[in-house]
Image (cartoon, rainbow, N blue to C red; front, side, top):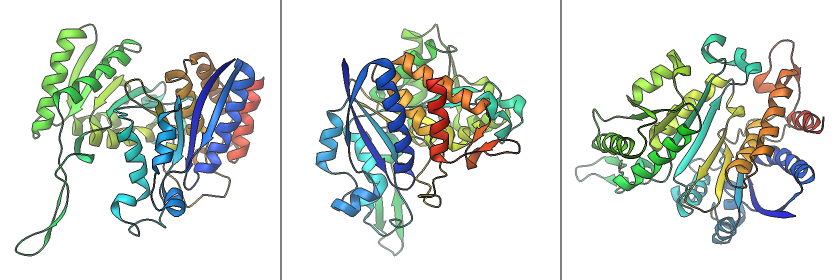
Length: 362
C-alpha cells in the first residue's frame, strides 16, 4: 500500500471546522484508492502564538518540511490584530512557512461552477465557463524586499518603507511555471505588471519576453498592465487563461477574480517550490464572525486537498473525482450560507461534507 505523509495545519477561526471535512474526504480517498495517509497535526497562526508565543515553531516547520504535502486552514483574528509584535502576528507564521520552504509559485484557480454562475457578482454570460489560473510569485517582491520598516524622520514624523525587488532568476522561474501550466490548458499567458512606472516591472517584462522567445514560443504571450488587468477581469474575464504576476498584484487580482466565481469559499490554492512539499490552503480568511457556528463553507478546503492529490501525490484521478462530485452536489442545489439563494437547500459545514461524501460514494 502506498503511504503519503500529510501535515494538517487547521489554524484559526473556521480552520478547524473546515479541516474536519477534509479529514473525512481523506478517509474516503484511503478506502477508495488503496492508499494510506500518515497524518500529523500542527499549530500555526494565532493558536500557535497562544500556545508557544510564536506563530510557527521550529519543530512544526521541521515536521512540515518532512511531509509530502501540507494542507492548511486559515490564520488570524481580531484578538491578535495590533496586540502582538509585528513579527509574531498570525500571518507571520504563514509567511515564514512559505519562505523557508521556498514556495515561490502560488497557483490560484478561479473557476466558476455552472451551478453557481448566477451567484457571481457579474451576469451569467460573463462568468459561465470561467476558468482562469493565476500563477503568482510568492517568495519575493514587496512583501519580502529590503529595506523595509517604519522609521522616525529627523525633523519629526515617520516613514513606512517597503521595497519592490525582483531578480531575473526569480522572474524566470515563476514565468516558466506559468508557461508550463498554459501548455496543459488553453495555451495563453497574460503577464501582468506595471512596467510603465516601476523598474521592477520593466525587468519583469523583459525577462518574461526573453524566456518566451527562447523556450515557449508555442504559447501565446500578452503583456498587460496590472491596473488594466483588474479592469478586464470585470469587463471580459473569459479572455484570460493563465495570468502570471508578482506577489503584490497577484494577491489583489486573484481576490478580485474570486468574486466572479460566486464566493471566496469556493477557491483553493497551491504553493509549490522545487521538489519539496507543497502547501495547499483555501483563499478565504479565518472568518472569525462565523467561527464555531458550523456554517462555514468547506468546499475551498476540500478542493485544496484535491490540488494536493494532483500536484504533490500524483493522484490526479482522485482529484478529478472530488472536483466532479463537488460540481454534482452544487447541481443538486446544496448551498452553505455564503452561496444561498432562493430555492436551494441550505446546509452547514458538516451538511456540505455529508453531501460531498454521498456523491463520492454513489
